[in-house]
Amino acid sequence: MNKNEETINRFYTAFQKLDYASMQACYHPETVFNDPVFGLLDAASTNAMWQMLCTRAKGFSLTYNNIQLLDEEYTTCNWHATYLFSGSGRKVNNKSKAYMRFKDGLIIEHTDGFDFYKWTRMALGLPGFLFGWSNFMQRKIQKKARTGLIKFMNQNN
View 1 (cartoon, rainbow, N blue to C red):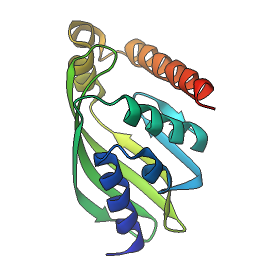
View 2: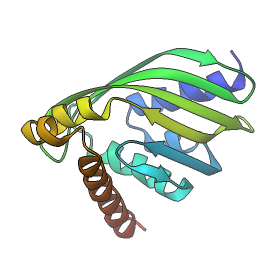
View 3: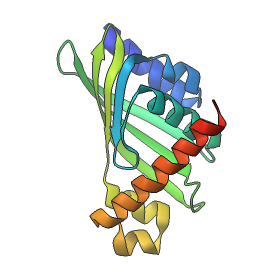
View 4: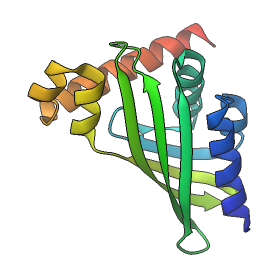
């Protein structure tokens, strides 16, 4: 097992335990993160996001598999999280693909890709079904997620 694969295993094992501090330790100090809900985040925001998500998680479980080492820098894997979405209390089964770039054995770029429309239908119910496919809805959700993250960061500094 190479260093990048070890880091991925440490990261997702910590995620399974909702151990945000161990997850944060897998990131390079200059990391960036991107996903359909939060958009692009810098290192401080990425660390705060994981702390917020882990401390608020309800009904959470996670599995991961299919780690693929693409080259010395790039790796992908699949992960599947089940949880209750805090905004609605609805159950979400989110299947994601992580794309990671490594520097010095740590994650410096992390992008999670998943079907946003499917996620909105599970997380939001009827509004997600009706509008989850639209750029308007994605921007609205990202704005709400970012606002919540900033509030969390301000309360936890």
